[in-house]
Length: 371
Image (cartoon, rainbow, N blue to C red; front, side, top):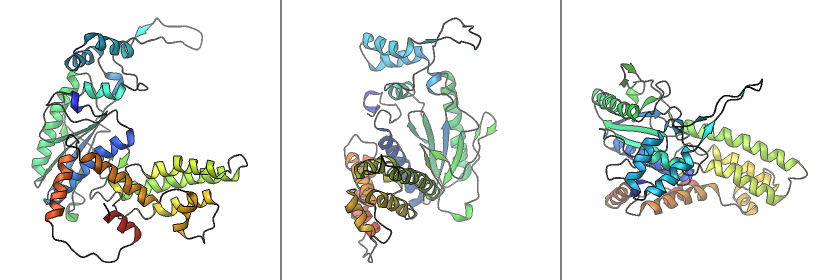
């Protein structure tokens, strides 16, 4: 559930209570589209990824209550919500049996709560206006600015960081200066080694050429090569679990293996699929998924790959990735969606662009062209 509809008009667009993977893919898709727009304009996009320290543990209950009253006209409803997050206390017990007095928690939102992401979104919904574009998914914040001049972008980001620092200090939120990093996104290989220098509190923020945001590894030219390499290693370890499960007597059933493959392998392989499915580095993932299908079906390596998905009763990975992309695009066609304007602009550009005859393509390329 997006929180922008209930927030003030000047509030930052934040995703929160929707399913985690779809919300994170939406946020990354929005950032990727704007970074690629800067590539088309021959500009360089610079970003700062802000890491908040113990974000849920530093939410002031009094400040959250005031911001809830701005949105909800019923003070009894606000009081009930605050009772669910505020009526908590703790006591410390040592090994020798000594116990401290009961202390009440005044600045915490329980992370296990379903309302925690939504309440935190409301708490930071009034982020100050900045020169750079702001991105936020619950407690993961990022700002990005595109320009052709390095010094102009560094000055804009430094100014925005000072503005955000004042806001975070006012509302008792803290961000780690060691984990908060800056990064650049461009296609100019001559400046591949150039580092961004963003100052905050008279200190230069660390520069990272491959930052991590929402669990995904980004690179300078947005090829997602490093992210897909780490994804292949993760899939390999999960296929090893499936192989161990198939070798046991109690877990060798085809239905059990199929459910385990969908839960362990395909769910991981489809994470951020709308973002990286068009990358040129996706091919190494296919053999790992094929190994999982061979475990489910019991087929040998001589079996054609196209037959594995039919025998296992699982859609091919490229079709599942394309389906996730089409589902995101279908939701983006709604006028209130965050990607609506970017998708409309892309469709207009595709309609006005000259048609170029494409050569015979592979199965994966044909699937992507169907989008």
